[in-house]
Length: 130
View 1 (cartoon, rainbow, N blue to C red):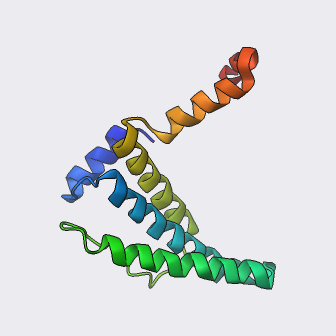
View 2: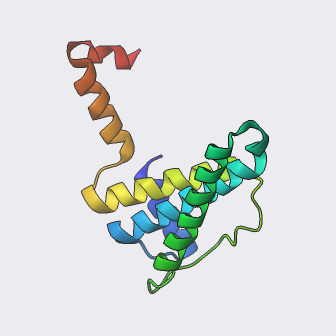
């Protein structure tokens, strides 16, 4: 997603743009929500070890929530009551990862991924344009 779109969303919602550190805590909180949502829908397909790991990620997400909730201007818009929409949790993770990356480097995950792919492919990088 274009970072300008995310910035416009923040402005439209009256949200404060976070520092890189705070955006990282927001991202980790969202990863916890995604773990919790996945567990709520796919527990039967998971091993005991995988279930435990997702529970740990969920709990650590709550811990990240606690840390970031102490940031002035922080707005919590998901109380984790609804765990049904995994797509929305993935979208939140993607958005917060982009906010973190942009706050830290003034670039986006998409730009970093493309650069990494080009480096890995070397002379075959033109294959990415097909």
